[in-house]
Length: 267
Image (cartoon, rainbow, N blue to C red; front, side):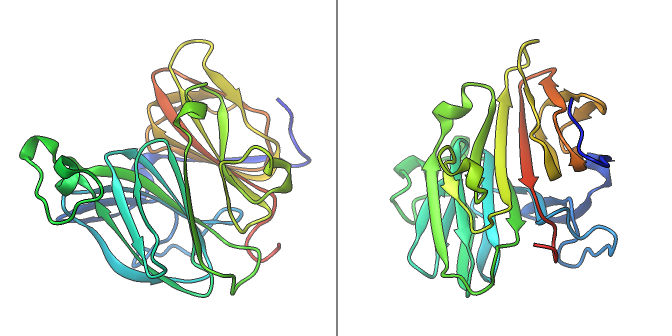
């Protein structure tokens, strides 16, 4: 395990997250979000939002605005429909990398796709039979772009085959070192987003990169992190000036890792 000059590790347990619960949404917030504000918990590095959301069938977020933010959505179960004011429309499902650059301003909606699964993603207004209705579970993450006022954009790409290998896969990045092996790009040259799907076998493990800031989130399953111990679904670890720790899975697990080499206000 390598360590940079003055490494620091903070463990944040799943049950300590702020929560928004309404009839169709169960959302858990790793950082201050909406009406939930904690001045001591607003971001880590360049990561401002890590929302773990479950949305009921036929429900979702109606059209709303965003500006000057790189938004990455990672679906864990079910499927999510994205539509925006620039005419982009996409079906997001497990194994699909997706990024929206809000830039100068964009309107978009995100809805659970279960209500139209019977007729396929191209149809509209067709009700699914009850056995096809399921919640959609996803994690949405926001990082700060290099500069405000960029042109809004959207990108998605299927990467399920790469994830099947079991290692740490670079899903989205602006860091130059990942330009040749990232699935999609983000307008943040100090950031990269990685995902690992581990089988739970003894040899299933990976090593964290060295970075000024790392955010490790256990999206599902149970893992063991070197120097930390067991981590369970919904747990997160925030690392500062460190890296090289190995993470292995006790059961089939999915781990989301943000690697960042700058922090808010100091890019």
